[in-house]
Length: 125
Image 1 (cartoon, rainbow, N blue to C red):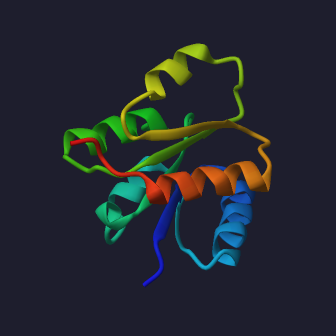
Image 2 (image 1 turned 90 degrees about the vertical axis):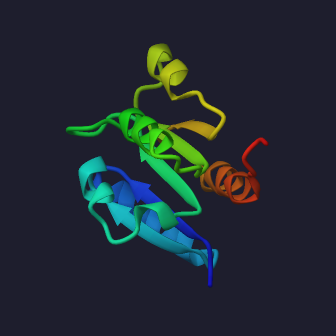
């Protein structure tokens, strides 16, 4: 079974383009428009990599990440944002599970390198 990359972003065009890009490399994709939708999906803990928009309606991507960590979910995360100058969010997103923090628009190669790093990531002992 191919690794599962779960994308949580409220922008439908981002979800669609990342869905196509990730699938083109033989990976499975789960798409959610909000943190709440992701949490109520069939198997949120089965993701091998999370792609979280920093700013989401309702629970933010950073809050979702903290919630999952508090529940013991050790999944590598790639944060994406359209707000490059938000140093506070970048600092809040930092964790042992954060593999990348990308500013939209990002390149395909940059994104796929981050996914590759996330899929190779192992929790520290």
